Image 1 (cartoon, rainbow, N blue to C red):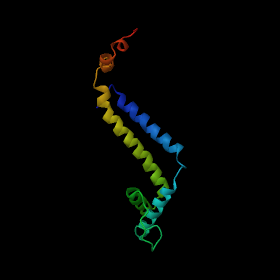
Image 2: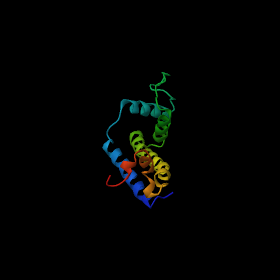
Image 3: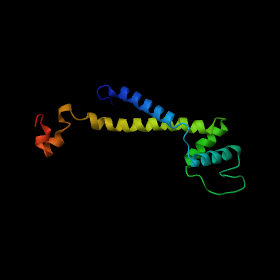
Image 4: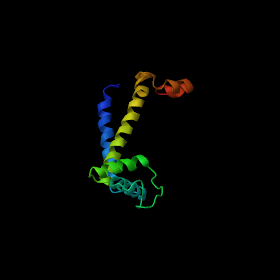
Length: 130
């Protein structure tokens, strides 16, 4: 649903924001991400869901990212770069989803009626020059 043709503009704006955020934090990683990469690498090598081979200790806090890391390792891709690029893509998709959900709410009311609830509560604030 388009609201005055703003959808393409905001799509590009959200994509640029996601890429900019990803670029700003490209070298920032926490220790938990490396734990996930280690589990993923071990799964890809056939050692199973372990941090150290031979020790069955649960320690992965994000099973889906672990499986994504395992898939990228199996494909010969860099797990860190894959996770960062997917993080940027998922950030953009989440922003687009939120934007698409808000468009009907924002664009549903005619331009002059957007402040109607404010006028009903405070009639003196709803008028210009008051």
